[in-house]
Length: 109
Image (cartoon, one colour):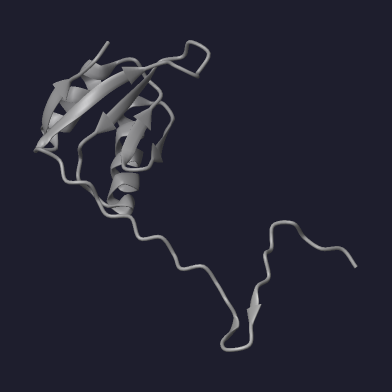
């Protein structure tokens, strides 16, 4: 019999199998200004633009990320409550976000 190391079975005489409670992450409140940072640490010199301070939940962030990636013609992802776009062209991201009605500042680098 092979035991999978990723499964942790815990039993109790009162309630049967005990499962961990799902983590509920709260959307961070911003100050109303979206900031676009440039970062290249840990990426072998490749620059990415990190968009912070949107104040949106995960589903809305994913939809906005898809829209921005299509407009810029590049890749990216959503990590936590930030959007990472694989481009150094922050001016293009700033103009796209301003057209969507956000107040944007270029921060860092």
